[in-house]
Image 1 (cartoon, helix red, strand yellow):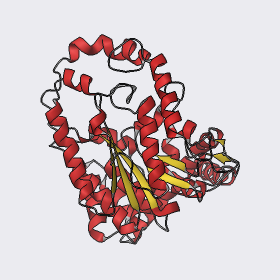
Image 2: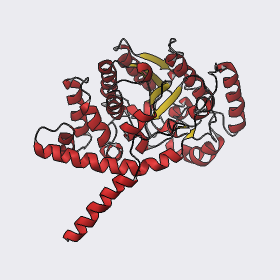
Image 3: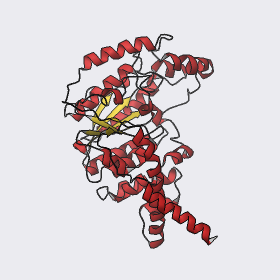
Image 4: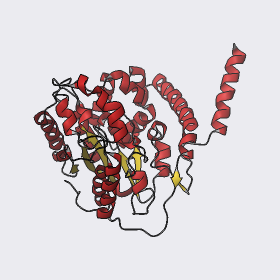
Length: 379
């Protein structure tokens, strides 16, 4: 038995020697557009890959849209041109404002390029009941939590709020205490969690590095937003021919249309009121304030005809959007790019909740102008 333990310890030690450290950066490759939970959880990797013209963008599943479906995604618009702004995309599906509060607190310790951050939020985050604990548990990141706790700029009341909410989402007490250790046993727990997390992320980041794209070079260009939007409209007309909603053909015919009859009024009881997400959004903005980071909150709309069909009225949705706006308005440094009035605009979304061809262009214009110091487009 002792021999087995010794072998296991040796394997772990060798792994630390063989696997690249998290903060290794390839100067010729841009990993900011890679959709990856490992990347999003690695504070060292993200910090190492932030450059002077980087812009931290926090979001969710909208970052997973492939270029073959929507060629206007950030990796194609910003990643293949040198517009002077290169987004660092952080977040995966089901990452919501509590997760983003941890991520920002972790990444902003010591400052960010431009001292700015973009947060994309959508109606789906604010459903009654909040995010279930099982799903949150799959996305919880101890490395982010530990780095968040280590950021001394964050006030005690904000840390306490995050810790309480993590407990409500099912994170166990041992893990919570290890993030802010008060005694030797908790310090040992933290050291073990740190080592395990480091080893796991080192191994997973190998794939992230392989998926990076060549770093855009050359002179800084000025984006022609009118031309980009015209091109997006042309693409949309080719990719949405089977429906009046402006959804992408394959999504509509294979996923949405077969289910529509069974979905009629299926969610008419939804209110978007019984959720902690509004408070979590407020917490995120509190972290921005504490860290001296200027936020742009981008409100992503839903597809109005679909939500009408499933019984969530325009009035219910409008009230939820207003609550989001009210939270943002309570923070004077926060800017808003509000696209909630685009619910019935064809081609703005490619499915029922994610930016489509023209939607990404308009959002990217807002993000670009925010990064470059202009007033938020669409606010």
